[in-house]
Amino acid sequence: MSGELFPRSRSEVGPGAVLVPDWLDVERQRELVAACREWARPPAGMRTVRTPGGGVMTARQVCLGWHWLPYRYSATVDDGDGAPVKPFPPELGELAREAVAAAYGEPAAAEYDVALINFYDGDARMGMHQDKEERSTAPVVSLSLGDTCVFRFGNPDSRSRPYTDLELRSGDLFVFGGPSRLAYHGVPRVLPGTAPDRLDLTGRLNLTLRVTGLDHP
Ligand SMILES: O=C(O)CCC(=O)C(=O)O
Ligand SMILES: [Fe+2]
Image 1 (cartoon, rainbow, N blue to C red):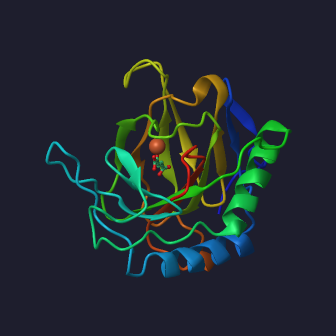
Image 2 (spheres, helix red, strand yellow):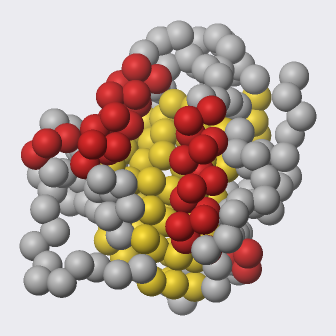
Image 3 (cartoon, rainbow, N blue to C red):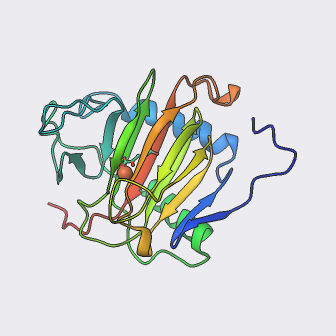
């Protein structure tokens, strides 16, 4: 539920960084949540990610197409059960292309080949980072489902200011490419209990769709 008197409108948060509120209708959100529940199952299911410095990411993650781990891509879940990563579904490629067209008004140039699905429950959050393991400069497509979060979108030079805090709600699309492709970003907070009732989801799911630029094994 948005609660706004007027619908939120598309906004450019930075050069090449575009928020399209309410891009997915509730039916599509429900379908994606159901699909995420399947993708989260083992083998190659949702896991806790550990960083080389000994840290633990509080958002749990499952990948499709390529397995991301700090800080590279692999064809197998090298930091989990070792299973081959689940395939990247063609529907998500189509969704990514539609998303780029909706954000930029022009079609995507490259084939999307990886999805990182992050699940935030409890106090989960994500620190400021760049998405830089890809060899392609194609825009990152981000879809939010479930609880609203505060999404911090910064600049390509440092984790600190200037940055903009925006709300990403269930169904929102955020695309960042061009001069913003390597901008630092993170999720300082999730607002519990804000998911639409019809989603039947406690917590927040985020799908980030990317082009790795890697050759498939
Ligand atoms: O959950 C989000 O909105 C951001 C996820 C993210 O930045 C990532 O997976 O690299
Ligand atoms: Fe990211």
